[in-house]
Image 1 (cartoon, rainbow over the protein chains, first blue to last red):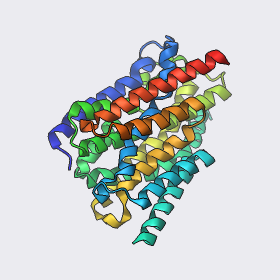
Image 2 (image 1 turned 45 degrees about the horizontal axis):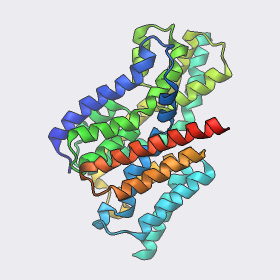
Image 3 (image 1 turned 135 degrees about the horizontal axis):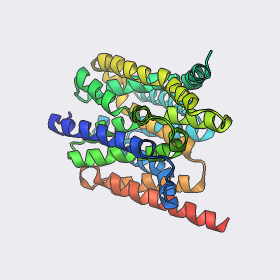
Length: 108
Length: 233
């Protein structure tokens, strides 16, 4: 369950912060280059954050009370492998979901 | 047809393929948000004001872990930091556009509209500012309304989804599926691998602070390796 007071602090600040990130260079006059180190670091934000966001939940899912679950683990590996092989997000989602349901059905 | 008008429709058709991902992703957000206990209207305020899918999911997840507001905020904003790059890359194209136009465009600057715009402006470098603006708003047209509508649809059906559907795992699958195609170079692979290992090793840290440490170190590792490889090449 989500704590309402935290939620209502987060949403407006996240909305403003996200807007300012987008407005940063586009809104101010445009041709100032970003320092090279910053451009380089920004390239890696998504690959550095998204895996860390999901890895603990993949290994210790809340839905199974934190017990490692072979169905979820296999689905995660298949998703990643398909995404790397096809370079296509949608095929990776489809393969991962199919694996998850197949495994849940086999193991049930 | 005027040039701006044809640019608008070019943008619209260039962004059409993204609807295939925007619709399920938006619905998933609606479902996940209501499953987490949000009302439909709260879900909609969230999605309309923030309008950045991956960070909305990240915020929902950390909120559910009862993390303090500051941690939720830092995590979700970190997910959106990549948009600084988008803002930098598009700025030279729209320097001549009125400020209010650029202010409005900023709200609609998402992965999909950025991707279609950069591809188009590279292909057709001679477009006027008016055409570029028209193209951009053309690409917004199928993406934004569908994202909002899909969020709403997901929020409305949210609580009707039974636990056997294992929707708890939709989010990990989606994020992994987004990351996998980005693993194009060794530094990207190292950053992602380190991100997984560190987040597991630091999972004991309270309120998802381990995530922030893991993400910062992985980002630094990726950037440093990238710089080092470039110097050697």
